[in-house]
Structure formats: C-alpha cells, structure tokens
Amino acid sequence: CRSLQKTDSMCNAFLNVKFMGGCPSAYTTRRTPILDSTDPLFFLMFDSQVAVPGGGVSIEVKHKVMPKLSVPVKYPWYVRDEILRKTYFGVVKDEISINFGAIGFAWEEHLGSTFIDLDSRWFSPCWRSLERTPVESRHLWAEDSPNGKGTIDLFVDIIGAEEYERRPYLYPSIPLQLPVRKRFMFRCTIFDIQDVYLPFLLSNDINKFANFYVAVRFGNDPDDERKTDLCKYSYDGTAAFNWRMGWWIKLPNLDSKPRLKIQVFEDLGFGASSDRLCALVDIKIRSLLNEALSTGESVIRRKQAVVLRHPYYPSIRARASIALEVVPEEHTRLKSCNYGQDGYDTNQHPDYVLPKPFRPAVFSVVNPSPYFSYTFAKMMEGITWQIMTYSLLIPLIIMALQFIWFTPWYWYLVSGILGLIIYLRVSYVGWSDNSMSSQNLTPYQAQTVGTVLSSAIASASQ
Image (cartoon, rainbow, N blue to C red; front, side, top):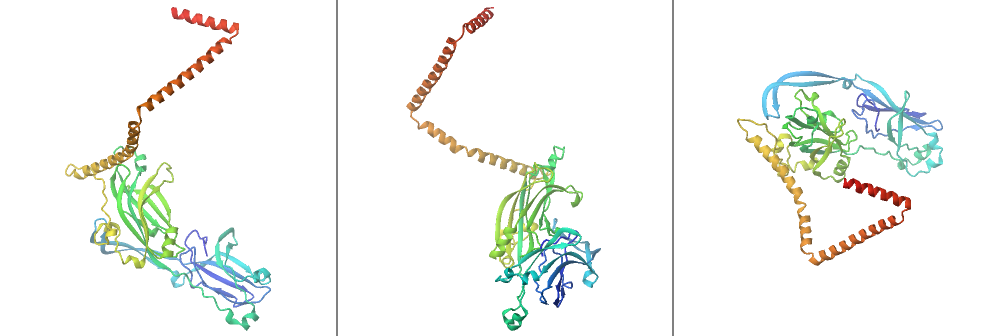
C-alpha cells in the first residue's frame, strides 16, 4: 500500500481479504500488522477456489490501534555532559513505554477497501489473451468519504479448474519476497553559516550579539534530529561549526522520506521551544540514496553552499556550507569516523579529521588576545576578498595599455582628421537646412521674426 490516509498517527496496517463464492472465503493478517508505516509492504499471496459467474474479491485495509503509555521516571546514575565532555553522578530522566497492544488490548479502524469483479475478467477475451498478468494500482475508498484513502498495488491471476487439475506443475505458487534491505550510514557535515541577518533585523540594539546553532532532521521523524553545538557572540550573521552528524538507515525504505531539513536557530536562553527560527531549507536526497543503493559504493557530495530562506521574511537569503556522504555498512569499518566534538580528534582516519571552528570572542580586559585575533582575521579575510576582486581587472588594464602603446601615431592622426571631416560635414548640413528654412518664410512670418529680433536687440541694449 502507498500513502494511507491516517492523520492522527502512523498506521498499523493489516489486510482482510474476502473471496465471494470461494473456498477458503477469507484471510486476515490482523495478528501481524505492519507497524508505524503509511506505505506498508505486505508481499503476500492469497489463493482460493472461486466459482464464476458471481465471483469477486474484496480487499480491506484496516488500522490496528495499539495504545501505548509513557511513564516518566528518574533515577540516580552517571550523566555525560557532551559540551564539557565530563561524566558526573547525577539524576537521569527517562521514560518507560508500555505497549498495551502487544498484550492483546487493541481495536481496529477501517481505512479503505476495493472490490475486484472476477466475472468481468474471466469472460473478457482481451484480459484472457494477456501473456502476463499485469500489476495494477487500485484506489482505496471509505464509505464515509468521497476522497481516496490511498492505493494498493496487486495482481490477480485466474486459472481454470480443469487446466490446473490436469497440469498443476505449470502453475506453481509465485514466491513473493520483500526486497533485501542494506544498512547505510548517512553523514552530514555542517561547516559554517553566513548572512543570517534576521536577529539583527528584529533587534534595535546596535551592539546585538546572536548565538546560533543548526538542527538537521533526516526524514520526518523528530527522533532523527541532530543539533550542532552553540556558536556564541556572532555580530555579523556568520557562525562556524565543523560539526559532523550521522544516521543509520536501511535501503530501500518507503517509510523514510528522502529529505534533509536544515534549520538555523538563535538560542534565546529560554529553552529549545522558545528559540527563534532564522532560516531553513529542505534538501531532496532521493537521487543520492538511489545512487548508493544501485552502485553499492560510497557516494560523496563534497563541501557546497545551499541557500536557506525564511517562510515569513522573503528577504532572508542565508547560506550554509555542508557536505553529504552515504556509506555502506561494510565500508564504514575501513575508515574510522567520529561525530560531534569527537570529529576534531586525531584518533580517526585522516580524511575525516575536522579543524576546530574559528569563532568570535568578546572583549576582555584580562585577556583581550582572542578578541583582537578574531577581529584581525575577519578584517584580513574581507581585505583578501577585495584584493582578489580588484585583481581580476589587472589583465584588462594591461591589455588596454598594451593596445595604446603598440598603436602607431599616424593611426591616431588619420582617425582625428576623419572625425573632424565628419563633424564639419554634419555642421554644414545643419546650417544649410536652417538657411533654406529661413528663405521659405512668408512675408507675415518674416515680419514677425524681424519684430522679435528688434525686441531682443532693444532689450540687450538696455
């Protein structure tokens, strides 16, 4: 099934198959539902001896409601602080999930169904002339809604009873197997962000400092979200991280949406729920995953810039430098790779060692060296880009000077004479036109012109 419509939660889908006038007359998979999936893969075959005319197949897709209860618990144990990289004895907060559906307390809800008329196929010469039974995609419908509730892919094969009893070896059961899934490691490295100006646009403080971090989610599951550490004291909308994240995935997998959501937040200091969203982008990675699955080799997308926007501020065009990699499970053992702050350590493969980010520092009277070092480095970075931009004009200037230097002097003389002749010619044509227009005046027009000229001379003399 594909795109089952279940809005309030994920589907625990199972099938009820009924054969009208058949023996056996019904099948169900209620005991083995496909859990937490809107695109369940069944790969099941049902057979029955059906009498025609009057035969038909009804396929019903249902959702098995399996209630769960999460109980928060606290207990004393060792706690690991990833920022300070220390372990201390403290209180661990956790949740214990109780699945009542696993112990038999569950009920079912109808999602959609479809009906296949076997008479219209068995008595159709066109359908019986097909060499191979086609796979068809049928919509699922509910009685209380005119909208489709999803689709189901299936094929129906009908064999005559006499033909099957005479030569059953020609019609063996078709083995249906789920596609073999392989494990891959998906890696995303966040290098830096630039032009994140939203905190400064919304603030009236000219001395505003922003604290940025980046959240990356693979697919649509909130549990598959990773975050970088915090980059503090940003005054120009830039922040450096050099932070690597990783997810174990299985391919092919219809449940996982092939998307990577990157969000830039400003830490306001009141908890993650109150942090300000500054920019985001959705990256489609289906082609990347398909390439890794088809080739069976590592697929790497090296450092590149992506543009991030804001849904309510169209003028925001932030940038983030990222790198993506999909590695088969057997290849991950060849090169060791660390994640998070451990990505700066040298106890991994040299290809994966990341430099520590160069970040801003506030001014301190006790130790002003970090502040001046960062300010000087940023200033030199800007000057370097300006020098590189202006240096692109040097070849054009040299070419222009070389053209002027090697051009003979008499070429300039000839071009000057030609220009003077063209100017005199144009001036003469304009003077001739004015003379002809004055000669063609009527006596009244000539008298008017003379009166105007006399008035002008009298005014000038006064």
